[in-house]
Image (cartoon, rainbow, N blue to C red):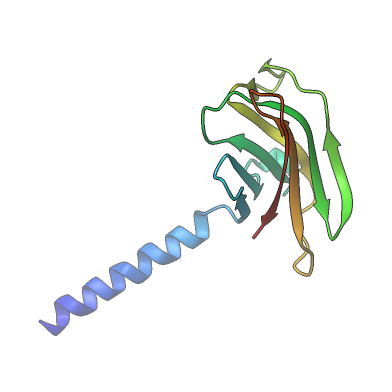
Length: 138
């Protein structure tokens, strides 16, 4: 009986080690109303050279018009976008306007441990009302 418990514990430890060895480190955040999901993650491809990527995805199917995206580190603007297109980029990255998906808001350095990161999404709903969601990445 003790031997079977030991085997189960060893299997759980082994699976945990494999999971953490191959999982991609990331920071994530969602808007308060659940409309937006933001991910800041390390890219696994060897040719990326350890680069990190920030992507913004609309989770629901509301008809929205995104006006601007901002990526902020410690109250300093790192990058922003206010022009968006729909289609496939030269590297096969797919961008959509409804539901909104912007898979490459930022491509660059890894996050600093002592910094705080936010993505600000400024968008209009179907009635023309402007909204601003500030999402903290953790």
